[in-house]
Amino acid sequence: MGEKNVMMAFALEYFDGGVLELDERYVRWVVRTWEFVGQERTENYYPLHPCTDEEMSNFYPAENE
Image (cartoon, rainbow, N blue to C red):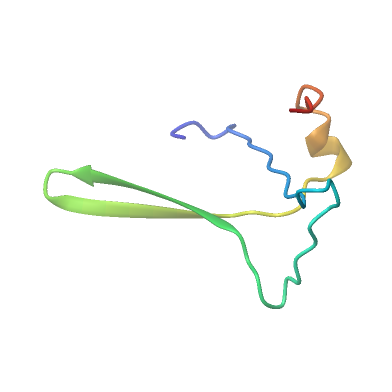
């Protein structure tokens, strides 16, 4: 996570395979990392957003499991 070019993608689906759509007025997704340096804890927040087609092209094709 210390590198500037780290990308991750997540998909949320219902158990039956339907796409889970969340209302952004009520639900926001963020990533929080923290570390201890000596006795002090530092936190970083990273907002998430839906991937663009260009961003998705940077990943290998998804596998069904």
